[in-house]
Amino acid sequence: MAMKRRQKEDVEIPSSSLADIAFLLLIFFLVATTIDVDKGLTLVLPPVDVEEMEINRKNITNILINDAGQVLLDNEVVNARDVERLMRDKLRENDKLIVSLKTTRGTKYKVYIQVLDQLKRAGATRISIAEPEEV
Image 1 (spheres, helix red, strand yellow):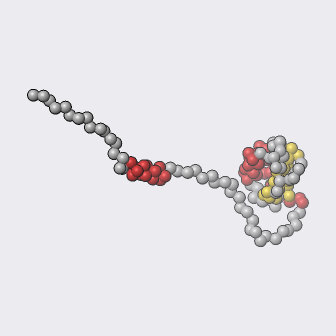
Image 2 (cartoon, rainbow, N blue to C red):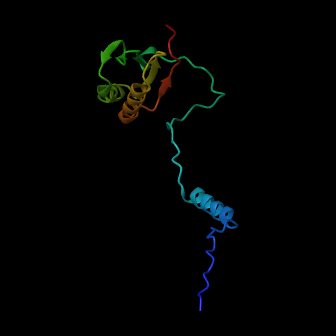
Image 3 (cartoon, rainbow, N blue to C red):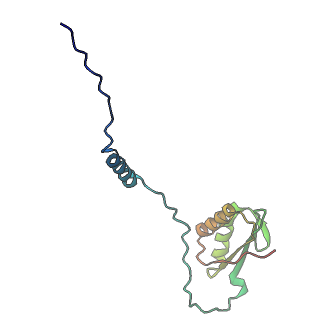
């Protein structure tokens, strides 16, 4: 008696449900993935219809950040880390003080944000962000 050999069957991966599986994986990753959103700076901007008013010069202090990253507080070079302490002292002397923060076009963003953070920690609520000076 001779044994019959079975023919080898071709093994195939069923491709009819492949599209469904890919679609379900796509939906899963879209739902499960979180996207970090930058919060940005928390600044309260004045309303658009505010009238211009004259401000006494003694109530304004100027901060300039130049291209080299130097911070000038009323035309005196100071360290960016000292801005909080210096502004806290100035605000103690004059509670109506307005800080005018100016930069140049080449000012590094990191230094600008560092100074802005120092001003907020010092308690400065009246900060005027002036346009960069043209060189």
